[in-house]
Length: 125
Image 1 (cartoon, helix red, strand yellow):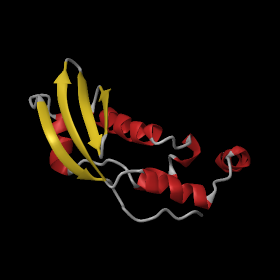
Image 2: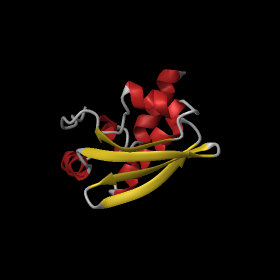
Image 3: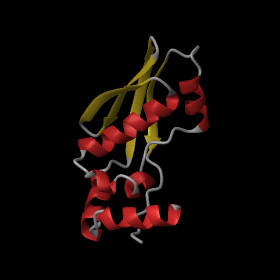
């Protein structure tokens, strides 16, 4: 059954264009700076790169990380069909930062610099 589902979804998956993929990859910043505070049940963060700055939030560390990555892709007008393959260049906090995001006793962190994961060009299958 899963085999049928996988093949069925392949029929409706949009065809990705290599040149567009590389252009979208190059739009994403090499590094970002993240500051965050806790506001009630939320982690509210400010993300900066170059002259750009945006704010996002999440209820948990994982949700906050996901919203940062989703916002990076959306701000750069990258179509949803490219999100999965461009995940090789995303915000992944190191173990200490991830632990701090999960520790409700830590109320804020400021100006932490992050290289976005995997700075190699994407390869299309």
